[in-house]
Amino acid sequence: MAESLSFSRAADRGTVYDEILPQIAALVEGEADVVANLANIAAVLKQAFGFFWVGFYLAKESELVLGPFQGPLACTRIKFGQGVCGHAYSTRETIIVPNVDEFPGHIACASESRSEIVVPIIKDDRCVGVLDVDSDRLDDFSQVDSDGLARIVRIVEGFVE
Image (cartoon, rainbow, N blue to C red):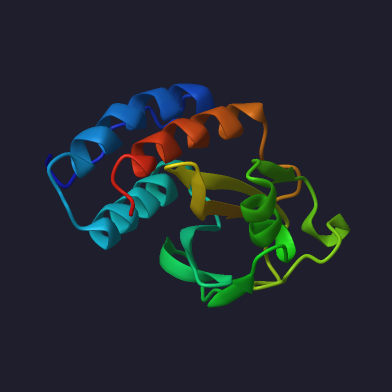
């Protein structure tokens, strides 16, 4: 795939997810390097939606460790069960947080983050990490994002270790 991304800038989020999904699939097809693929997926999501922070945390021993991301500095390690990412990892469920200040135990990696969505990555019936997306606006995520990001995570599950 060429190093360009095509999507309708004025379209609703659902349409943009529909447009970028086949491009992400083509981007990672034939590329064996997990880090390269995750980095490009984070870049596509940042470019397409302008989210404040987009990235991956990967499970290593008893914690999630920062992987490829786009955005400001981030927390490097998050214990399983802690914060939104750790909770999504432990429950294996997508979590939408309209206001991070109201989430018990929220870990403030960046004070500008106002809302968040985290989607677990499941491979061979084990959670291997999460896709984390933060917004600098309150209540910025909906079921449309949950569904769209879940479709992208299905692609990730095909190549992640």
